[in-house]
Image (cartoon, rainbow, N blue to C red; front, top):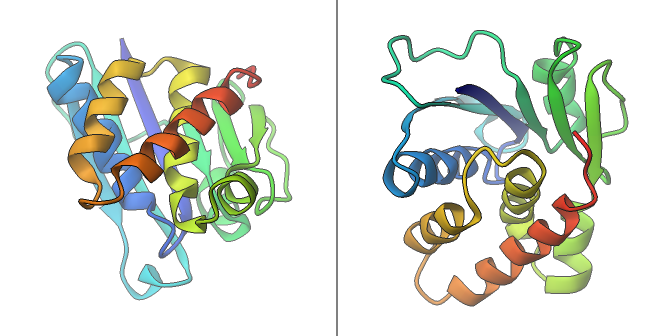
Length: 178
């Protein structure tokens, strides 16, 4: 089975890190094939950024995401640039506090940034909350795989904060019907 996952938000939200972690979870811990790509430049801080992951049971022969079936959108600007043309069969997770448009595809609102602020006191982990919600809502990788990939990817001393964020996302993802 092939999944094409597109992440978008503004620079500084950890959009690229999210895709790297998801790809690592798939390739290293779930024994799938994964390819991760990213787009950033002048938008690296503040403008729309995008990163994508292809996850497949067989070798990935073409590394470019052509038709994302799963979107994770964390800013209005990211939605307008990368999510507005999502196909009707796509599924989308939106950061409910930062994305105000609604797509034509199936979607769920996830209060990732709000939860990061209120419950964890650190906005910087909103991307990890979205990863947890993504995994629970779509089962694109296993929970065990994403847990190990997060632990491998976050700075030393932040492991507990990031695991708390991931678990918060798991909880939020249970309410998502995408």
